[in-house]
Image (cartoon, rainbow, N blue to C red; front, side, top):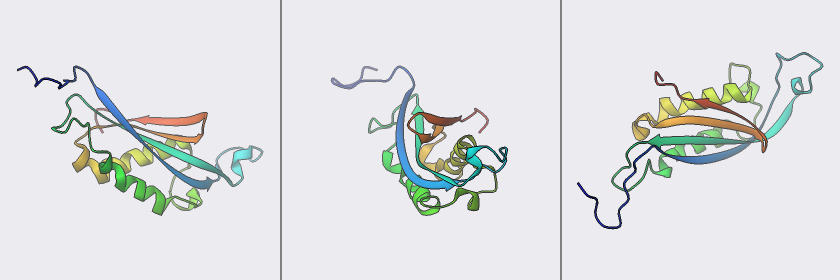
Length: 138
């Protein structure tokens, strides 16, 4: 079937991304006592969510960016201007935060995303980040 004139059809995987920011501190207490990150220190975190699909919906979207708004609300109400150590029961590295946020999205937004979550990246600085990529089994 030929698409209507002026309509593009994807012939590959398309991803979209949405970034959210929050400011918080943490203490990496499992590091040697002399490591600077064992002390309380803060970051202006940026969390980037990647959603992907082979086929776009009827509006030409992978998903509506608005479907991710509850995640932004979660970050703002639960993490912004807090000590992360008080909020989670794991060593709050960027790597483990990326895993945590990825599973939060799966647990809370999956009905809207239809299994399309690809990855979650947590950046502590403009040059330092960790990315969790969803496995096929997740």
